[in-house]
Image (cartoon, rainbow, N blue to C red; front, side, top):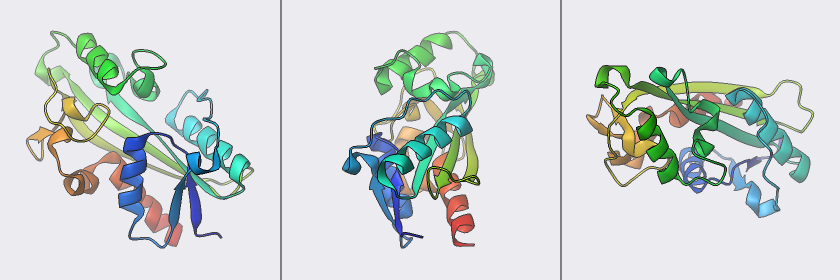
Length: 197
């Protein structure tokens, strides 16, 4: 199989994380934007469905294997919301700040012990667009939602995601610390093990 894999994402934060996490492998990860791949319409009802839709779309347009991640944050008090709608929680063209503020508003006055949450990551690799057995990896990262943002690093909901093991928000972690414990870091390590098996 080609040592080139198309990354089916236009999210700059994800692109940066994938580039760092894949650097030890002898695989060239190329963003789908380099091939002018149109964004896939995420019509799935689960993270797995959406990741498969995105990977298949990238395979179809490039003829190369593709990897896609569908990830988001699940808040227990909100019955798993924002979930698959994390990137568009406050609307289709929402910014990270818009989404983060919408989440804080939804949790207004909710006590600390009821603000438990987790980041979820599903990683799918398809060898071609008709691949009947895509490689699927899943990992999560447990935490809770703060009442206001702290920290300047990371992206998405990181400034309000409390990481108990480091006693700080995800946006206060170094990229090395984050990759070691995050949902995406864990899913990619799982992928590397399976891929090289």
